[in-house]
Image (cartoon, rainbow, N blue to C red; front, top):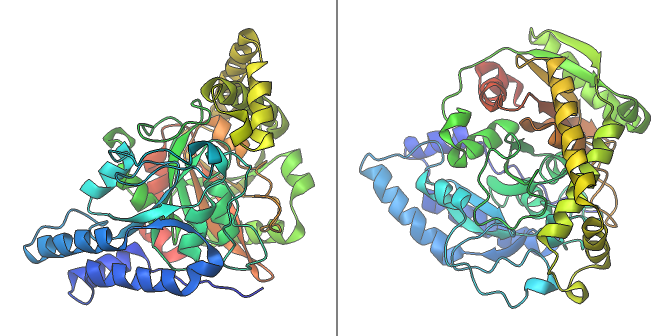
Length: 431
């Protein structure tokens, strides 16, 4: 079906144009609003658009720039916010009838407040699956092919950027909800280390994994966005450039599930990295993805049940209602045992690689599926469970659809991953 893609612009280029006086924040937001008016009736990425509020914010930011005050690379850059994250004055509906009468938020979520302080302009709210789970599906379409999904749960975040309606967006990841939709929509993402980002003002799903992640036209831009809301200890604001060793990760699940086009695109990306002078080698995963998927599922269900035990079952999707009950049925001892196994898996996995390596693998088994699902998260979930930062890179194309790859490091190596993405080599490779 008809594609509605458009490059929203790279942050470095937009910031340079503003610095040179060729572009204003107000003109950039006006451009985004015009693009939303032109394509969002087809893409359906946006829930609320704060046109007047955003324009008012840009005028103040443009005045600051004229006075010589520039807050950083995000000064005047518009950002969309997934509708499980509070924005003052807007209700956080989370695509659920159970929240249909919820009053507007009285304050921004911490991550939104930090982005505003960094000079970003909040343009509005973006569609999500219900409760940021995998059902019910939002109306959002994939801009590359309107008959296909944009992934989930952060469907609107990836689609809004791919359609050229905003250069940056926020999402959340509990399983594969940032990195997978970025891959399906051909954009970049950066999910910081699990639990490294405070969740105040973010609807919880499974608190052991819930993490706010960033989307951008490239993984480099997503890292810049994450730097705008991340805590200083992650070192994302000025990471030193690095030339890491790259491990092409192998696992039976990856070999069995990967479509030929996906495997070819990720191999070609590995060859590009090797051609740029990075050492690339293939290594088998020291912990099976199957074991990580099973353990993550137990922890997620147990925490979903405990977190949403009071959700009105008649006002949520049957899948969520059933999984809340399944989670509540998990005994405390079994939940704690799963957390213990997960800790052991993390130790065993990362001790095999150390903090200096970055691991590369496909973001999903195949390109975006039809509109009936959010796609297969089985390649992302094990990395979410392992706890490190994860970037989605644009690996290439399979026919008319994008293929994404994941690049991850050990928990706490966010600055190392960002340092590579933001380095001269990362810019040259346009990751």
